Image (tube, rainbow, N blue to C red; front, side, top):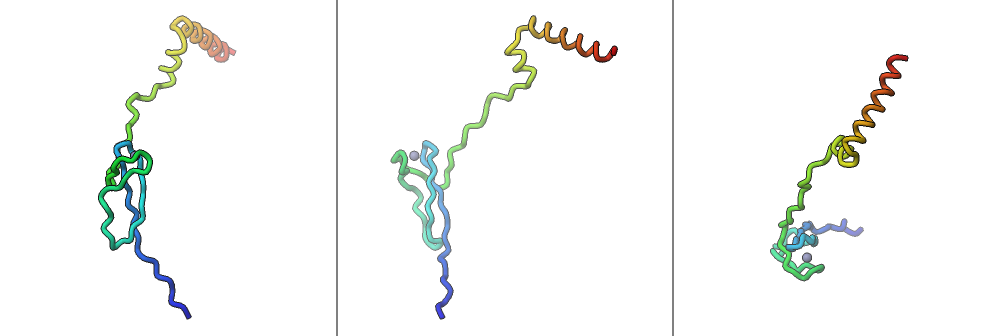
Length: 94
Ligand SMILES: [Zn+2]
C-alpha cells in the first residue's frame, strides 16, 4: 500500500511593474519569495504585491435628459414637448 501523496504548501505571489503588468508566481510556503522580479512583458523591475491603482472614471455619468439636450436644439425640444402634450391631452379628454 502506498502512502497518500502529500502536497507541499504553496503560496501565490503577485508582482507588478510600473506599467501595471501583473505576473504571478507560485512558491513553496516555507520559502522567502524574492521582493522583485523582471517583468516578462516590458523587462522592467516588478515589485511584489504593489498594484498600480487603476484609474477611476472621472467624468460623471450623464442623465438621460442631459443626453437628449445635447442631441436636440431648444427649438426641437419645444416642438417635441408641444407634440407630446397634445397627445397626452387628447388621451385624457377622450
Ligand atoms: Zn511590465
